[in-house]
Image 1: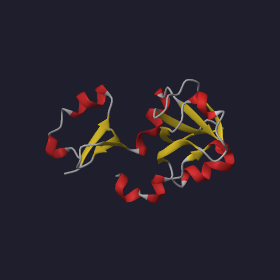
Image 2: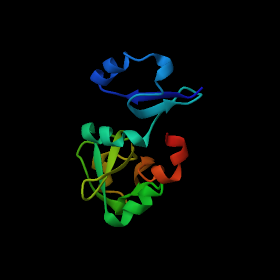
Image 3: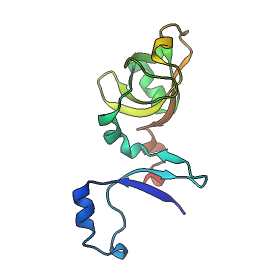
Image 4: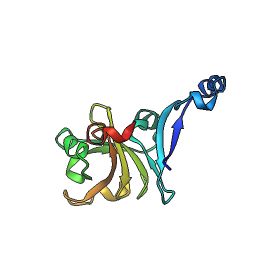
Length: 141
C-alpha cells in the first residue's frame, strides 16, 4: 500500500471534513511518501513550499544547471555560491543563479571545506529536481 503525505492548509482541511471520505480522492499537495521499508521520500512537487523555508541554500552556475536537472550531483566547479554554515549531510535547496528553485539534495561537504576542494569534488548529492516532472510524470500524480 502506497502511503502518501499531503500538505494542506488548516482552513482547507476543516472545509474537507464536510465531505465523506468516500467522496474525497485527496486534498492538498503531495509532500512525499513512505516506502515499503518505511523510509520517507520527499516529492519534487513540494519544492515550492520547501524553498520558502529552507535554511541551507546552494546556487548552481548556469553551465551546471542542466547536469543537475538530469539527475547529476553538483561538483565544485558548478557551484555558484552557498549559504554559510551548512553542515555535512544537511538538506539543501538548489537554486539557479536567478533564484529559481531547481531541486534539493544533501551537502556532501560542509561550507568551510568547500573552498579547499578540487574542481571535480562533489559538493551537493542530488536527491530531486524539477526535471523529474518529465522523467517520472506518471508516478507523480
